[in-house]
Every structure is written in structure tokens, then in C-alpha cells.
Image 1 (tube, rainbow, N blue to C red):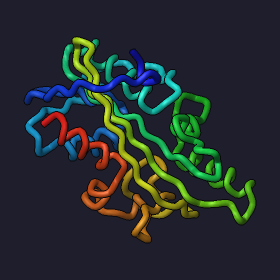
Image 2 (image 1 turned 90 degrees about the horizontal axis):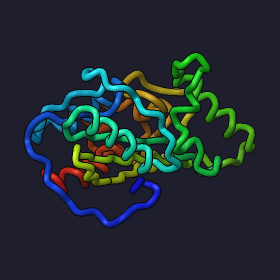
Image 3 (image 1 turned 60 degrees about the horizontal axis):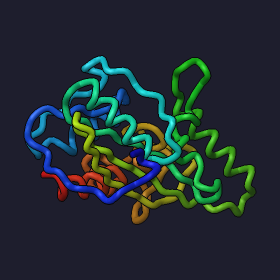
Image 4 (image 1 turned 45 degrees about the vertical axis):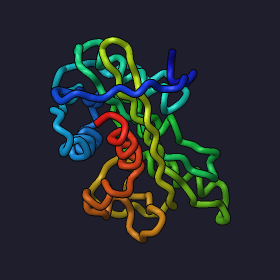
Length: 212
């Protein structure tokens, strides 16, 4: 069963030991390591294990997260945690959404997040000066075991878009996203502050409550 066809979950606890973080994104791996630090697991990234990045063919965050987690668990023989996340802009009909990373593609296999942020801003500008700047980040976590068992957790953070980009910490679209209740972008927050309020932190709170 894929993440596009979601069934009720049977919750399984996660035992101490090695856990694969199914990502080659160093910023994302760094955040996930920090969030896992208190729980007695030993995170190792897919890149450290030289695992390939599967093609993300899902049409939802959940489907892509599951695809990545299952691949890493199958290839490593270890439990694997994958994150699929993205920026959803109200005035753009939810775009870039599940195609968040695609908006950063440069055509040579690399990703340029300044280009991605500019594309979002240009698309908003084309909507006219009255276009809503409301946006939210979504993070879906999939935790998979080598025997095929998978669990899902989804978090969300609402905010608005700012321009030009501000801040030097974080990654991806962080410099243009201002979370509700703050005037600073994600990229202007201390990592500990972001970890407390982010979409990823929201999803992790659910995961921790379920599996540890």
C-alpha cells in the first residue's frame, strides 16, 4: 500500500540502535539529528551509507516520504526515517507543494534555492499587488522497518512570505518564510527556536509520542 492510499496505522515502538535518515540533504539531516538526540537512537544518513536517492514519483507528501523510507529500510536492513516537506502558498493554489524541490532545479542536476524563492516571488507578483502572502510548510515523516511496516506523522506551520530573503541560517525556503507570531524569517531564528515551532518539530512531537 502506498501513501496515496492511507490505512489506519498500527503503532510500533522504535527500539534503541541505528536509524537511517533517508535523506542526502545536509540541512535536513542536521535538523533531524538534533530532534532525535534525546531519544537514544544512533542516526546515520543515507548519504553516509552510500544509499541511492529514489525518484520521488508520489503525488502527495505522504507518498514520497513513504517511498524514501521504504527504499532506505530495504537497502540498509535498518529502520529508516524519511521526511517529505514543502512550502504551500495560498495564492498559488498550494504550489510549489509536493514539487517544492523541483522549483529549485537548475537543469544540471543541481538545486538553487535562491532561484526557487525568486520563482515563488515572481509567481506571486504575477497575481497582482493584492495577492495573499499566506503560506504554510508541511512536513510528513514516514518511519519504515525492513519487514515493510510503515508509520506516518504530519506537521504544519503557518505563516507569511517576505521579500527579499532574510537570514543566513536554515535551508531551502527558510529565508522567505515568517512563522505566525513572529517577525523574523525561519532563517533568522536560532536553530533551537526553529526546532520548537517548525512544521518538522510538529511532526516529530507526534512521532516521539507514538514510538518512544
